[in-house]
Amino acid sequence: MDTVTEKKEEIDRILKMVNNSEISSIRHTVTQIINVISDPNSSARDLKNVIEIDPPLSSKLLKLSNSAFYGYPKTISEIQEAIVCIGFEAVKELALNQKVCELFERSDYLDGYSRISLWKHSVAVALCSKLIYRREFRERGENVYAAGLLHDIGIIVLDQFLQPVFIDILRKSRGDKNNLINIETSILGFNHADIGRAIAEDWGFPDELVFALGYHHNPDDVDEEFQKIVSTVFVSDCISQSKYIGYCDAPYKNRTLFQKCLMKLNIKEKAIGYIIEEAEEEIEKMKKSGWF
Image 1 (cartoon, rainbow, N blue to C red):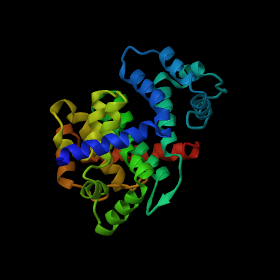
Image 2: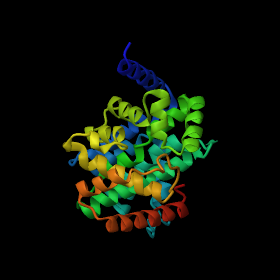
Image 3: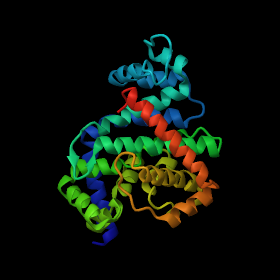
């Protein structure tokens, strides 16, 4: 059996475990929220219907809608009211955040890594990606925000289903001063980005998300059609790691590739500095409002 076949079979085996575990409990709601985000014709009613069939999500969303983060002067008691008061875009983002957050709630600390610290990193990448799209491209960037939140879902899977090997990978990564993805590939023959891509494909995510999750460490390997979103997530990942926001799986930055992506996106490094500053400020506000 050739290496490519073995890799596919092992990823398929892991995917089956994912779909038979509590991870799959977020699948339906996350997929529906992403569908609302991706559809330019979606309405507030569509979003309300998705949220209200998930009572724990509704409860979390209403609690955060009433937090100091949004600063709305009166109590918000219904999802429809939240959409009207804090905005359709804000509620889409908040709903996706709170549902994906369920994956990161376990707080085991493993050799410098924890799911909570990975969640903080994922939020930072999502914020930076969204800010790049809005500031530099004048686009809303909903899919890129989702890509940032989910880009490291494969690490959660390795933590949950291959934990003994994952601990070895963590230790070797730190000891060898090498990025996690390189150690994963050398030991397993595949990596967390491969797993992320497989999940995105299996769960029916838009192609933009499939490629963003699958190639966020190697944007040069994707077709022109997906260069913008993948390069944006790569740049956002790099700058979040450089500021040590949450868990850093790739602290050893490929400076050449980083500069190449900035050139492709036509973004100045000075602009990136402002974006990471704004993301850090927003994360601090989120912490004070009980998001982390």
